[in-house]
Length: 157
Image (cartoon, rainbow, N blue to C red; front, side, top):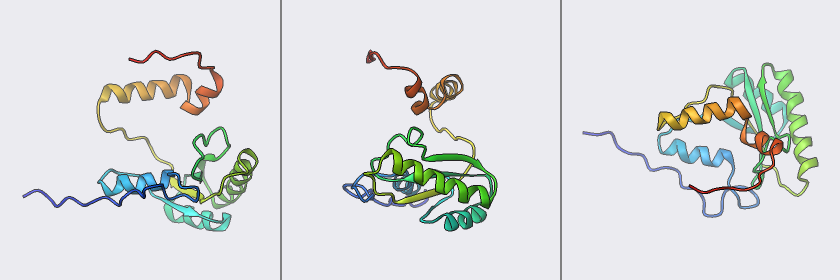
């Protein structure tokens, strides 16, 4: 007999952020409810809390500011990768929060996601996975690529 299927945590109608939008954390809770593997992560409101959470997760970690409406975290300076100590986490927390407030002073921040820094896992068509990896190696992350290269038009397929 197949194992029981768990119902996922519902995504709230307007999103769970203060502005009604979705955040990475809410999307991952939904995916985890469907049985997809997600990174270990916790939301921190202070630099001290982020450092404590990072020690519990284990280094290295990633910090990502969470705010509904913050679509391009890289452009806003809202991400720090490969943090290897509590001291680095405390400094990076202050930096990402200040950067987002300068970039988008209108946003209400939910906090900073402290996340394990792991490898990508892609489930599905291996050809698609190969294209994603090639894109990352050739042109960098999507936000970084779009910042470097002007989009002049699209041809739908």
